Image (cartoon, rainbow, N blue to C red; front, top):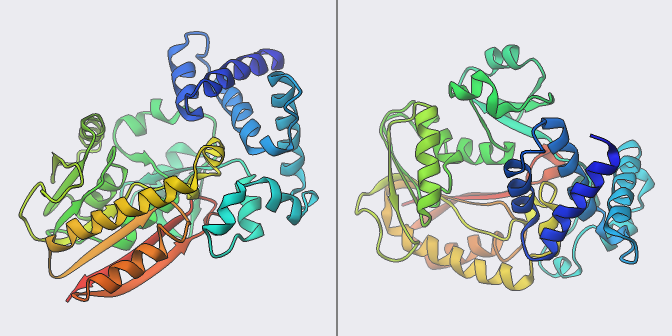
Length: 364
């Protein structure tokens, strides 16, 4: 595909975004439903142009056409890729993230800002103990010391079409998300609940760590997500789970007492801004504080579901104070029956992955 055609198609997608469609959804809808975009390389280059536009948005001139702005965004991206130090810290601080963020975080490290301007990498998770064998099959992968089953994929294949994916040998999952399940560390034979399971990425990992033994309850408010989860579980040969809808309210899906509960709560997603730069300019402080209310209520509703000695794991892919340390401090103050175990941030610049906050407690 000629470069001008890539730019023109990227501009069409940006017009969808301007009409109110999130960038990732506009890309997904346009590139999967349009029969003209069949080659992975074409889809990749269009996506790259769109995301470069949002990554470098505050460097672009609104007076220019969308095509010129897209071209300029790609030029900034290439310049940064070659020499990140050519962008001064004060310029990054003023342009990379929205102004309101400084009031919502304890600190904004310049290395995090640089990381936000890097193009994201792709992480996959092999079934437990099989990463070396999978790496030989896929060839273009790199291991990481952070997780024995995580691999960074550096190739250009459409992984969804590989026989290894179809056989359930791996999941496409960000490294930070994998580290959440490793922190939970469920044991075979235990009873666990993934309370906000979404489409089941962490659920599949929890089941794998449990060796498909014991019982894993999975719930979400979206029936569509639970259906997707069931499809993934079938492909991955996960069968020790029970999927149930739950809106997050005080009426729980079961009276079962659990050895462990994972609350991967809905959040503002600040930790994903490298992968989804459009969200930098659509997320608001109101979102942060409304979600913090939801997060507190989820933990409150779930607290009674733990056995004595059971562990509660709270995770959010954000870095704002209100949704991270603020939530942990509130839970500590309101639930003396729980012993705090740990609370830590996973920073994107340290992992080359999403940002995440994980807190854990044990019921006394």
